Image 1: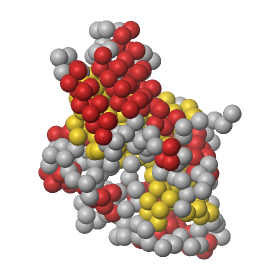
Image 2: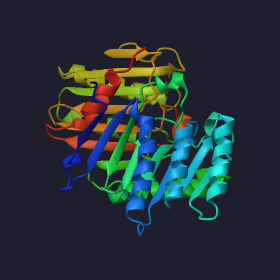
Image 3: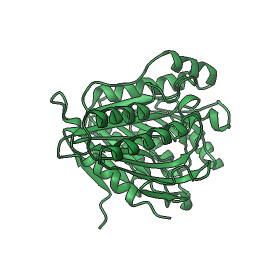
Image 4: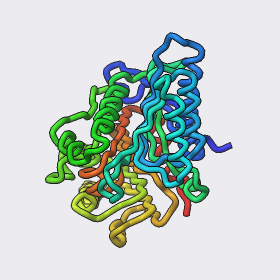
Amino acid sequence: MEKKTVTCTNVGNCNGAEHRVKVYKQPNVIAQYRRLLLKAAKAKRTNPDWDVKIHFCIYQLDAEHVVTACEEAGKAGVKVDVVYHFAQVGQVDVLAAETEAAQLSRGNVVFTKMQWGEGSSEQMHNKFLLVNHTKAHHNVTYVSTANVDGSAKKLKWQQSGICVYDHEGLYNAYLQYHEVIKRHSHDLAGFRQYMYHNNLNFEDGSGVSAYFMPIPKQDPWGAQNPLASVLLEFEQQLHQHPQDSVVAMNMAFFRCDDLGSKLIDQVHSMKQLAASQGKTCTVKSTIMSEEEGNPFPDFDQKKSNVHTHTKNYSMALLDSKVYVTLTGSTNCKKNDHCSKANNYLVIRETGDHHPVYDAFQDIQQSVHA
């Protein structure tokens, strides 16, 4: 049977931190939303005195079984706070309204529909779910690339999801971001200004970090962009310590704009540097939709027009044994970074054991036309 998840501990191996992480690929990515909702309900039923809370931030809410799981959690006494951008299927909007109305007396389930507009640059595009208590864990942060979409066509797309358990700092960072989004549900301009002037990012040296969009438009490929920061760090390391390296990009959408063109230039620069040193920078690109021709003609492995909906990067410095994985909701487009609400979750592993990096490499290899 094909393995659908991978579990690891000691992510990052930094500061003695130990965090349990589980990586998911289809068909378990969307299903994990429901599982976590039902686990929260079970925790509340088993421990009635616990103040169990769910905070769910999702771009598209179109799978009835997930909405009904929200209702089940609410009936158990879990506080369920859902922020979503839209639901294409009309009955889901009705169900959400009915669920909210049914729970008003207890105040347990609240659905907040974003009122930012329907344009590409006006999206609340996140896909994450937070649980503050399950039977086994103090908190769970689940970050995915998948919308809650039950259509048969989209269920064939490769997706990824990652749970980080018992990481209070990460959980609180995503919780704060959820609260900021909800507070600005009718005020996109205010949300952008708040994000431009307030740093909600999370970094603590544990090997797990998070970054929240949008960032200022003036410098989309600058220090506030975690993808740019990691690639620049890797190039600097290659200057100091020539070695073989890997850059793997598994993207739903790519646009050769002010950001995408910088990505191409950066990766080409790394390949040229490695070649000048007698080393190899292996570049793999997997893209569902390229909006600007064929920007990666000389990369080592290239797939395009394939069924991937991920927004993943997995990179390695092989001699230094540094492995960095970036995932989340952020496509490789300037407006995903500078206009929309999006996030990156970054996992850094060092040493001979790097199961998260390996899992994301496997997810990319499993993408098919």
